[in-house]
Length: 363
Ligand SMILES: NC(=O)c1ccc[n+]([C@@H]2O[C@H](COP(=O)([O-])OP(=O)(O)OC[C@H]3O[C@@H](n4cnc5c(N)ncnc54)[C@H](O)[C@@H]3O)[C@@H](O)[C@H]2O)c1
Image (cartoon, rainbow, N blue to C red; front, top):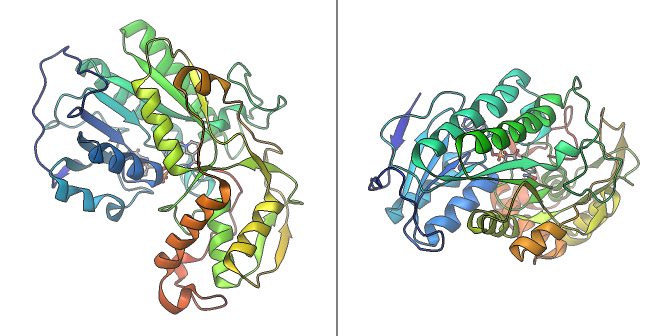
């Protein structure tokens, strides 16, 4: 289904014309723009004076994440499934950010075939649109392409350790295939493609019930419920605040022709899951207890990016500390859960209860 809502029309640009990457007023599409990272990206791009079209099927995203941008007159919300060819009625784009894909295990495993198709056909349709418009494309890949890594920290030249037939494969292998397709399509068809391998990112607008570790822990702590750690809690992740990630994606878009191949984006600071739980308990003043559950299949033990390529080629590294980012995220969930329910031990709406059965600790 295709539906355009709100926002002003964007003037089409003549075929083949490319805007100055640094100038304001570019026409930009963001697939998955109503999701967690996408909504912050749309907000930043509209704030910088660009005309932004968000394409989203609302599988995991929410209108409420971006609807407020329509008042700017620079934002158009288009309900569209990227597995289908792009709809008519859209302007010619200078830039496309391709983020459409559910990112949390609870969501991407709910319909694994759909996830695989979103990675494959969704990326193909988006590449075709970039070719048609002469747009630069930034593709959101993931640290999951490294699987359960045998090389630490993970560097872009590492090929990964991924199970092709496990419960996570629709996403992990789907994203690996999307990288291959984007690379070959770019080479063969002359489309300028850039790829961000995104590591764990957190912040406001994560969903309370999507099973990601930061939102799980915060909601559980605010409820005064048990904090669930899968495994012993000595497995590590590195957590990047969403504002830093948005800045990284924008720099990748604006980077010169020299930025070739995938670029790791994430925090180089490694934290154990047990330590994260203790920090969240401390920052919320919660009386929650930590309880342990069996580790899910194929759960990676360590995860930390080597970001030297992003630093050297884009001058990017995260600026916001884990505690500062958590403070903003906790404040968001307090508002989201609302009123008395946000108080420790208080009742919260069922929708705010973290996913448990399928909860895993990484996006
Ligand atoms: N958040 C992270 O830590 C993280 C880590 C690695 C990679 N990523 C990647 O970044 C991107 C955004 O992740 P997020 O955390 O914002 O996830 P999210 O689930 O909040 O957002 C994904 C968005 O894509 C939309 N979408 C899904 N399938 C679609 C389809 N077929 N057609 C149109 N829209 C569709 C959803 O409705 C949602 O708005 C994803 O591609 C994800 O793989 C995220």
